[in-house]
Length: 271
Image 1 (cartoon, rainbow, N blue to C red):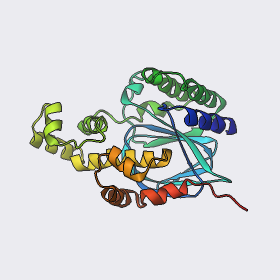
Image 2 (cartoon, one colour):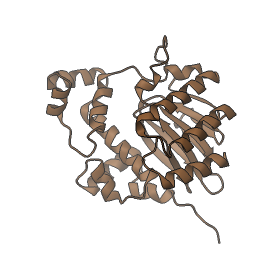
Image 3 (cartoon, rainbow, N blue to C red):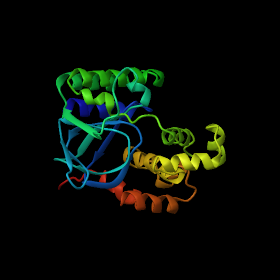
């Protein structure tokens, strides 16, 4: 695991953007209602991850958890020794197109060990990402999916949620993260009336505001966890003109402010 950590840190320090992310912290993080807007592979390389509160799922170092897209889940990131360290890889719906004959699963996640074949595939992705253009990233993501399938994790093919109107709205908002995307734009882009759009979103158990919050605050959470950008700049990048408004919404959803969360990333050193 240490070799993967060293390689990931080196690539992240020297290159951007990348097809993967690293999350690390020197103190325990407890974050509520974390949105998973796309299927997400989390590989824990050091420390321990806990998902959920009741009947919690535990993911120790040397294992992975693959999450299906969902509105939100509580998470704890628990350091061991100096830090918690995880490699994250987000997938797109089209990455699953190579799997046929699978229905969406009632299971919301799957777990497993980071076996040598999967570890090698991850190492290759990390090193390859230093020079590969974004247009080719999907090839490696699909390779990871097929590697998991080959290793016996057949459920991976069914973890992606079926296409929905909410997902299409999510993609439109995500493509204009710093802008205010309203009903007039969405109804025109989706070729339906505003009332029809509201009704169909309600039928899916969601709303435009709920999707906006998940997309924008989820992106803000990612930036707080992976960058050193000022909180005010992150707020602007997520479409909030007021840092205090962003902080209030962030705290309301995740149970912690951006500044408090950022402090947990610092690695404590002894005398």
